[in-house]
Length: 105
Image (cartoon, rainbow, N blue to C red; front, side, top):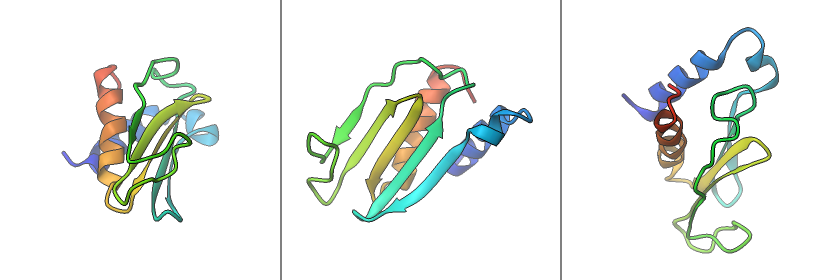
C-alpha cells in the first residue's frame, strides 16, 4: 500500500464528525524548497506518545544545512515533518510507520 493510501486510511479512521472540524493533516510546500507536513495529534491515540526526532542534514534550528534534508518531530501536540523536494513520501512514511507502530491505522 502506498504512503498516500496509508495516510488516507489513517485520516478517514480519525474522522468522527468532530475531530476533522478542528484537527487534521496539512501538506504544504516550503521555500527551502521542500515539503512540510503537519498532523494534529489531539483527539487521536497518538496524543502524548513519544516520537524520536529525526534530524538529517539540518542545523540546530532545523533549517536545511544540506541539499538533502529531513526533520520530523512532535511539538505542541502536532507532528511536524519537513524535508527537501524529494522527501514527501519519506515524510509521510516516517509519520505512518510511527502511527502504525502505536496501533493506529
